[in-house]
Amino acid sequence: MNTPLLKFILPLLVGAGLLSACSVLPAHKTPQKAYDLGTLSHAPPAKFVVPANVEIGNIESTPWLQGSNIYYRFVFTDATRLRRYTRSRWLTPPATLLGERLRAVMSTPDRTKSSKSATLRLNLHVERFEQVFTTPERSHALLQVDASLTSQDSDDTIAEQEFRLRKPSQSADAQGAVNALASASNEFIQQLSQWLRKVDPQADAG
Image (cartoon, rainbow, N blue to C red):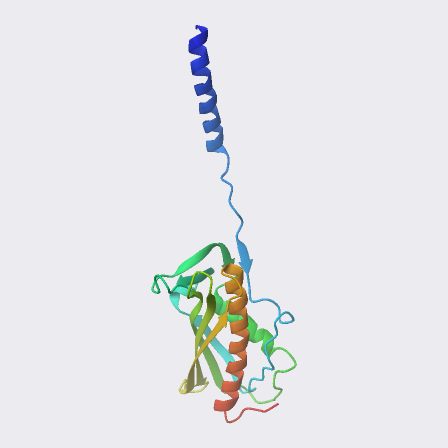
C-alpha cells in the first residue's frame, strides 16, 4: 500500500475504533437526589394535640401524586402543564410522607393522653403538592388536602374541611420546592389540629 493512501485510511480506522469503544461504555448518569420532609428537630410544627377519640384513617392522594416525582408548573406560560424535576425525587409518595409526619408528631409527648377508645376516623386526600412558578424567578409551594372526620361505627361524615396552603420558595429549583413544601406540611398539621379540636365536642384541651 502506498504511503499517501495509508495516510488517508489510518485516521479513518482510528476514528472508527474510538466510536466503537464509546458505544460499549456505559452512559454516565447523574444520580438522583432523594428528599423527605426533614426531621422534626429541624423544622418542628407548633404544638399538636389530637383528640384521643380520633384515629388516623386513610391518607390518599390524587392519581398523579402516587409516584415519587417532584412537580412544578409555570403558570405564567402554561398553567395546565405539570412538569417534574428529572434529577430529584421524593423518597416516597407525598401522601406517605405527610402520613409519616403526622404520625411522628402524634407520638410526641404533646399527644393527648386518655383511656377513651377511638370513635372517630380522620381521612385525608392530598389534591395538590407542587411548586408553582408565577415568574421564572418567583415560586411558591402549594399544598391542598381534603380532610373528613367520620364515625367509626356508621361511617357517617361528621365534618369536612379543605386545607389550602402556600409557602414561598427560597430558590427556583427542586431544593426550594422541597423546603417550601415541608414548611407547608408543618403548617397544615397545625391547622388540622386546630380544626379537629374545634369540630370534635369530645376533644380534650390537654
